[in-house]
Amino acid sequence: MAAELDGHVAREAAGSGSVAVGGDLTGSQVGIGGKVVQIQADGFATVLFMDGAEMGRAERRPLARTVQARRSLSALGRERELARLADAVDAAEPVQVYGPSGIGKTTLLLHATGRGTLGTATAAVEGTVLLSARGLPVEEVLQEIFLATYQVTGLHLPAQAQRRSLLAALRVLVVIDDLDCSADELADLVHALPHCVVVTASGRMSLTGGCTIGLRGLPWPAALTLFQDALGRPLTAEESAQAERAWQSTDGHPGRLGLVAAYLREAAEHGFPPEVPPADGLPLLVPKLMAWISSAAAGLLRQLAVAGDSEWSTALVEALPGGTAADVEELVRARLLVRTEARLRLAEGVATALEENQDDSRLPAVAGAVADWLARAEPADAADEVEVVTALVQRAADAGLDTLVARLARAGAPRLMLGLRWRAWGRLLDAGLHAAKRSRLRDDEAYFTHESGIRALCLGDVAKATALLSAAAALGVRGGEALRELLNDSPPPPDPGTMTAQQPAAPPSSAPAGPWHHGLLTGKALLAAAAAVAVAAFGLTAAFGGAGTPEAGPSSSASSR
Image 1 (cartoon, rainbow, N blue to C red):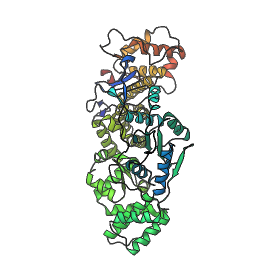
Image 2 (image 1 turned 45 degrees about the vertical axis):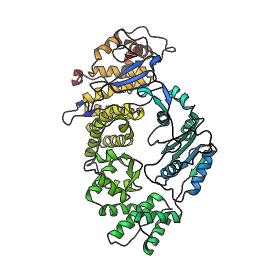
Image 3 (image 1 turned 90 degrees about the horizontal axis):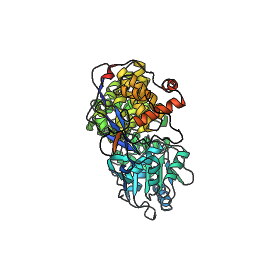
Image 4 (image 1 turned 60 degrees about the vertical axis):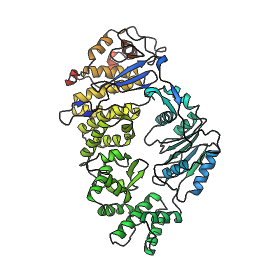
């Protein structure tokens, strides 16, 4: 699959659905292989093509052997696991650390990579790459590894086959946190990095042919240290007894123990006797802790819970209504919010505890604030918030809030495109298009139909691209007349066995000077060929009216674009 891109469109506060470009991403572009997607002044994307001789070069980046964490981390009680990890890396074996959420996988990886001893006995290791794969498919994980190890000109990525060829030459330690994939996908990732030592952390065991390290609960001495650190003092006899019972009932799970430790501290500060419930009663601690924090911090926590267990950046959290750094610190101290490097997420069990009383009343404010933030964000920053954005879009769709879905999708889709998140880009386009058609938001329908056609064109699906771009033209997207001209004056169909979308004909004489030439509505070669393929394979009726193709509606105000 091709890489993903991002642009930036923000919905106006008023109006029936019109959207203006928020910020100025006009001219922003990302290239993959011979294709380049560029944002136009009206917020719509176009496809350009690049001559092979002018494609960006990829050069190796210098890599450090260690990756220092932003905060001091200690892998309490994990000495045996750390030793096994070091031995496997020294033997150049692939390694998978697995266990449930909150068990300490991230802490273990950060501690191991930051000590400077991991891989020192392995000749294959020339440096270390540490990244999070949370929410990413394997192909995008490989893309992130490529960007971390190679420098490209103007963010013009080689095509997938060439990227894999360059990755096969690497000899580095690759440490990937939060990788959620099948055994076959993990095997594909390891195979794509044949000379690298690959270490992954996952929720379940899926590695075959390597070293697997399952994380379990902490031993009692480590758990006792965790409690003492949380309270900032030695435990009283009564607190120690409560802590040991909590350790036994939670099987030493560090995330749940952290919540209990916070409760013990807050109970002592508020003059309440420590009464820790059994493991199945841990959700009862959340409302008790929320009763002891400020109303502003509690309100912020409820807003974050709208997106479930999604991870947020600090900047995005502070963009929410009333979100402040002080509220974040209060929630982290209360162990209701967990900070992992520069990211924040709800602590273990908090989302479940709040879900019972959660309603959709906060959704419009939260989603609106996120859409406004997206309108100002850089594509790379927006790409980091894929999990939050897609969760909010799904929540709004489930609630039947079509206008909100369209607003979020239009704000996020182009930025995810430029931020190299093409799978998420496609999900937002699909959600936005369905919402626009349900609520008859014609401007939005035209936009999402057009952008879906652009994405299909980039992925090489010329028949689908032709159908979608034709439907967008019927809805009034600028350039529709040129497209109709191409479709009505197509050359004889080429041999499907010899035509590829990445090998367009020579640029027309009207193309601008230099290596770039337009390939959407002003470049007749590609779309005429696409139309010919669609006609030859399906006929125009089938190509434009098949299943999954947007119906061509009457012209709307979008025709003014």
